[in-house]
Length: 95
Image (cartoon, rainbow, N blue to C red; front, side):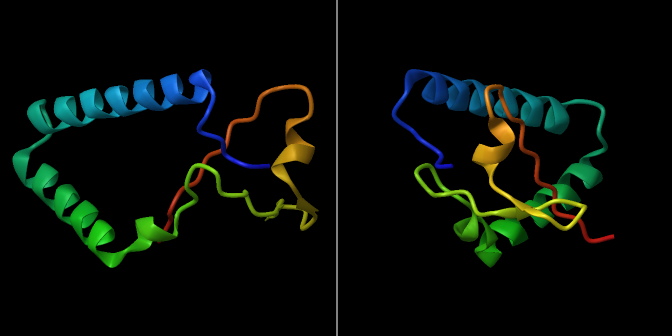
């Protein structure tokens, strides 16, 4: 499966997501969150960006890699998607 940029749906979805994320960030930074917490979190984001980790992320047009499910079997996004939609989530954990 490949992430495509050409269709209007994906472009509109990307623009909507960027707009919504901007609204969320503004509300977070200007809401009830204590300024020292905002400062710490923003510093972590800046360090992540400076580390270059985002440069390793999939970009539009990149092929999605095979993933391994909890059961240990490899699968592709195309296999999982079938006739319906598919929601992907990634999280970076360091617990």
